[in-house]
Image: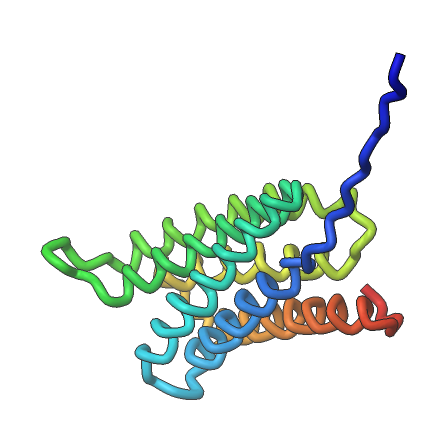
Length: 186
């Protein structure tokens, strides 16, 4: 009788989380700067939404799927398609009726609901920075949705997006640095 040998494989691929968080944070910061009234140009928001928020997060989601990380897969692919669809709303219509302010409010509210579901998942995680990100994300979506329903909030949605973008950027960079031996709080 021959002896059975078990072969253990080790996943040595990189952590896709910082890529997804960086794409999310940079696109969110750009949108936050725009929504806070610091510049009127939508073109940079659209470019960031498509290539940084959309494609980078979608790719990070695929890589997270390959690693078996369901939360990151759902979050990054979900918000990757958010950014791609958001960019489409900004550049449409291509034969479609333009989005109304109220319909964009409902669109944002539904994404806030998606974020709320992910927020609940973060409550069981050790990474407290993700809880902060998802609390700010849900607030940003719902506050921005309320502004689209006609309630004057001034630059509040932009400030929320800036805080969200900064917290996601910190978490992305802290993850990269901690993998290099630092011990930054998360």
